[in-house]
Length: 319
Ligand code: NAD
Ligand code: UDP
Image (cartoon, rainbow, N blue to C red; front, side):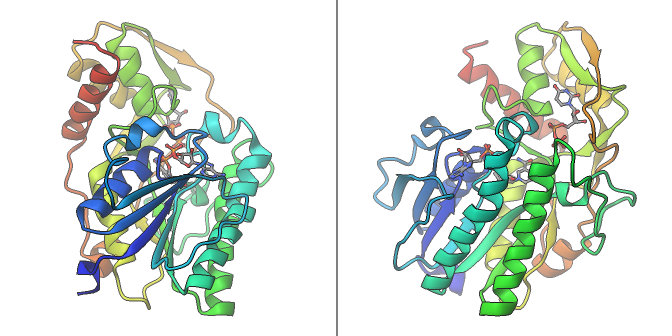
C-alpha cells in the first residue's frame, strides 16, 4: 500500500552509477525525487534523461555540509565514492563523507521523521575469513590500510545509523551492497568490470591485479535497484543489515576471459601487482534478503555484461 503513494524522496549521490538508476526507478514509480550530489564521481549526463521531469530536482550539494529541507519522506544515502581509486584519492574526505556527511543525512531524516536507507557495502567484511559472508559475520578489516578510509568509514556509518535508531528511534535500513555493475559506470571508474570492458573494446591489454585467482560476485544494476527499493518498503521493524548481491562467484581471470569472448576482442592480458588488502574471496549469503524481502537476483552475468558492453560501446562511439 505504502509503496503506491507518491512520496518526496531524497537520493544523495543520485548522479552516480547506482544513484542515477535509483532516481529513474523512483520517478517511474511516481515519486518526487531530489537528487543531492557534489559531482565528484557522478555526472550530470547520468541524470540528463530526468532533468526536465517535473518530479525531479537536482541540487549540487556536498553532504559534508548540512542540508535543511522540509517535507522529505524517505532518504537513500548513497553519496560516497565507491571505486578504490576514487575513495583513495582524498581519503580524509572519504571518511568525512562517511561520518560528518552521514550525520548530516541522519539529522535531515530526524528533523523530517523520514525513513533513511544507507548504501553500505560488502567491504565491511574486509578480507573475509568465512564464505559466503552472512550478516552476522563481523568481518576482517584492516583499520590502518589504504582501503580503511572506505571500509572503516562505511562501518562507522553503520554504527551511526544504529545509534540514531537506538537513541532517536529513527526508521533506518542498512543494505550491504556487493560488487555491482551496469550502464552509467564512468569511463574512468576504475573498477574491474568497466576497466576490462573498456580495455577489450579499445584493443588495450586487460590489467589483471595479482594472479587473477581472487574472486568477486557481480550483480547487475537492475537487480540491486529492486532489492534496495524492496528494503526501503519493508516493515519498519526489519532494519537489516541485509546483503544485496549475486551469489554467483567468479575469479577475476574468468571474468577477463568472459569479457574477451563477449566482445570478440583480441586484447592480451597483463598481470600487475595485487593492491594491499585486496580481498581474496567475496561472496554474499542472501538467505536473509530472500526470506525478508522475497528478493533474489535474476540477471545472469553474461546478460548483464552484454548490456554493459553495449553501453560502453555507445558512449565511446565504438561499433
Ligand atoms: P559512484 O561513485 O558512481 O557514485 C557516488 C556518488 O556520490 C557520485 O555521484 C558522487 O559524485 C557522489 N558523492 C561522493 N561524495 C559526495 C559528497 N561528499 N556529497 C555529495 N555527493 C557525493 O558510486 P556507486 O557505485 O554508484 O556507489 C553508490 C553508493 O553505493 C556508494 O555509497 C557506495 O559505497 C555504495 N556501494 C556501491 C557498490 C558498487 O559495487 N557499485 C558496492 C557497495 C557499495
Ligand atoms: N582488478 C583488476 N584489474 C582492474 C581493476 C580491478 O584485476 O583493472 C581487481 C581488483 O584488484 C580486485 C577485483 O578486480 O581484486 C575487483 O576490483 P574492484 O575495484 O572492481 O572492486 P573491489 O576490489 O572494491 O571489490
